[in-house]
Amino acid sequence: MKKLVILTGAGMSSESGIKTFRDSGGLWEEYEVTDVATPEAWVRNRALVLRFYNERRRQLGACKPNEGHQGLARLEKYFDVQIITQNIDDLHERAGSTKVLHLHGELTKARSSVYPTLVYDIGYKDIQEGDKCDKGSQLRPHIVWFGEEVPMMDEAVNLTADADIFVVVGSSLNVYPAAGLIHYAPAKASLWLIDPKDVVIPVSRNVEVIQEVASKGVKLLTESLMRL
Image (cartoon, rainbow, N blue to C red; front, side, top):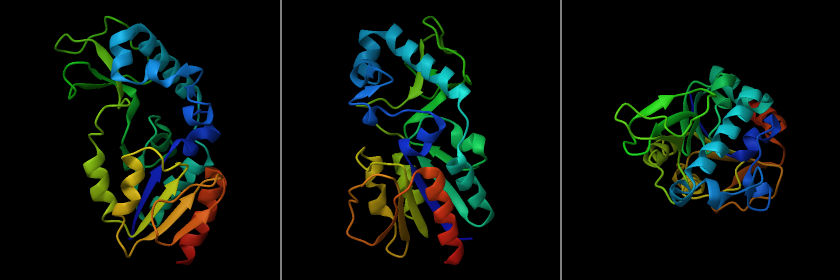
């Protein structure tokens, strides 16, 4: 089976009703990103950060995978598919994808604010002030905030470097280091981009562009890959 590596961004989940701050003038569900998605915000106003992610978690619980998510899951019948996602939702997993690497963390998990390896599945439940890990420190969202290292990046690079086909779906290719993954795709790999907007592609190689939303774009991608 050919190795198909797919990098997904916010546009992957927008049809499921999940918004991105980049489409809202720097706001994320009416919140300033610097107030809710940085280590400094956590120190400054823990209650606000917890409330913000509790709201996002409840929102996610009411959302469903869209046809784009489901189409990527169906590709596992024909390819060795690895999803690398910038999204913090669980819609890929709920659609049936079996290999998903979350670069920026997972909304349905909490972790210790002191011991980062202590991670807990919480589903769509709230995290409250006073909720603690097994070692007694406050739980925080299991999210990679702006200004924090991306611990799964090395693994993502290794997966990309082994791809026969590398696809970007719904990513502006503006958020680094994730946007740099395309540079690690082997010379032999075919490159694809699905996005309804004009995206500046940071490589000089040929990239097949499907200028559609994720649901329609994944369908067209599938038809094209079946002809290869």
